[in-house]
Image 1 (tube, rainbow, N blue to C red):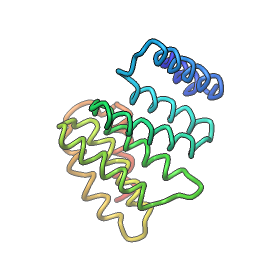
Image 2: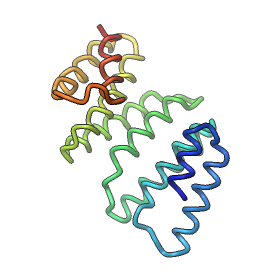
Image 3: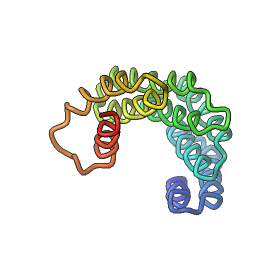
Image 4: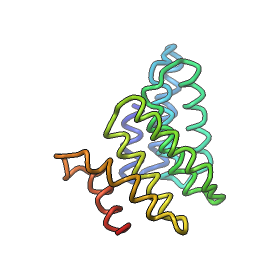
Length: 171
C-alpha cells in the first residue's frame, strides 16, 4: 500500500498517494512493524515534495533519520540525507549550507558503505549544489568527474545520464 501510494504520487496524484502512504504506515505501525519505517518516511517525503509540501517533507525526513538512528537501521541513510538536501534546495527558505551538509553526509555514508551507485547520486546532487554557487563549478567538476569515471557500463541509466549531463554543463 505504501509503495502504491508513492507510485500514485510519482504519476501525478500526489494527494491520493500521500493518503495511501500514510494509511499504509498507520497499518504497519498498528501491526507493530517498525522494520522499514525510515524507508517509508523517505517515500512519504518524496510524495510530499511532489505535492509542494517541501517543509513537511523535510520534517518526514528528519523523523526518518531519527527513527534510523534509534533503530540502528542505516541502510537508507544515504538516500534520506540526499533527499533531505534536495528538499532543502527546493525550500522557499533555501538554506544552501544545510543542503550542502546533507549532500556531504550522504556522500560520506555512501563511501563508508561502498555503494558506488549511491555515491554517484550523492555526488551528482552535491555537484549540482556547488555549481549553483558562484565560483564553485571547478570544485563540482572535480568531485563528480572521477566518480563518473568509475563506471564502465549502464550509461543508459537515469543516474549516469544525469551525471553526464551535469558534467557537460560544467565544461
